[in-house]
Image (cartoon, rainbow, N blue to C red; front, top):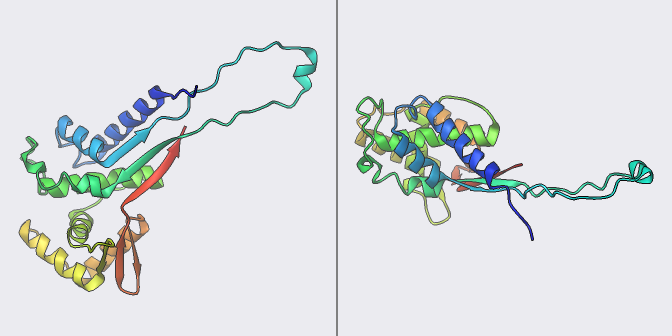
Length: 205
């Protein structure tokens, strides 16, 4: 019967929570909100537990080729759709963070970007409200195929920023945000059409 290493999965979940707290905005959020964020954004499955065997060691066995058994790794799945599902009511979640530099909904997306980049690329970078509001607006106005025209995206980002009392972006700032989201593999751009990646899956052991 296959057994799983639940301790490894628990350690990975704790690491994601720690990553959320390392982000400058995430550090301001309450622990309860960080937990809700990570639980919504991520799904962690455990790797297969190591197999313990008892065998007779003989002189001849020392010269035999080792019979290694591969261990099935665990998975981390980050899902934007599930994270953004909590955005509309996150301001009701008892943030207790009057010192947040951005709206609570934008803060959630900022921390999501930090975690995505850390898990997917192994890189630690800070993000601004520009990238966060851009991806939030693109998701809010995507079509059924998770696509939106790049020019329409600019209009929608401008509208959303205004609703958060943030200054409008120039065309150059919007283009830079789109390019950075492409580098993060959050979106793809082809022939002026933006496609939003819903999730990534990373293995660990």
